[in-house]
Image (cartoon, one colour):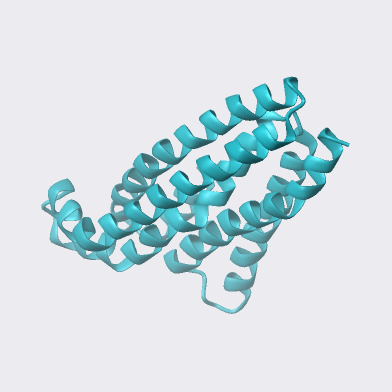
Length: 188
């Protein structure tokens, strides 16, 4: 919602182009969220049965397939993204705007894999404090990116997409860094 409000400042053409790109992002995130739900259930089962190896196995297998899906999604958007934009609108300016920012959307599936996967792990393990803290730090990074871009006179749609990409990377990295500690806490 914040992104949409901020993008509206750049005009209706950029807003319409972003709306198309967000549809691509939503489809990919729904697919990645499937792995998050799967690992969430498997993590909950492993924690309940006190199986450290079961939890780790679930994380590895779901993580592998999430990376495969994220990579395939990025490659699909790289190859077919331009044509998909053309299917979504016949307005030349909106097509051009969406194509200008398409590279950011191509990178998001790869940037989001760890974020979605570890969301599922932490929710399945009922470790929501760590999840909350990672979201908070990631949101601060997002806002700091936008504030810095504004301060430098570079506040534009690229800054918004960069902020979103950094948000996903930060969230995934923070949760991944806490994963060994989570394992030790759950299976001491």
